[in-house]
Image (cartoon, rainbow, N blue to C red; front, top):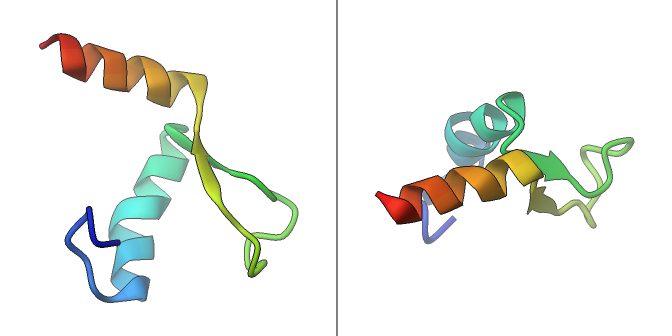
Length: 57
């Protein structure tokens, strides 16, 4: 949340995480339990490719 300059978890989830999940740049590590306290997120292949493109610009 710090890197995204967000302090409110709900806003971070709604404004950052959900949009990235919807366009498949991120994925949940435990998709069957989205509210798990152990939930984490990782880049998809599409997300990695997107970062490479940004770095090349």
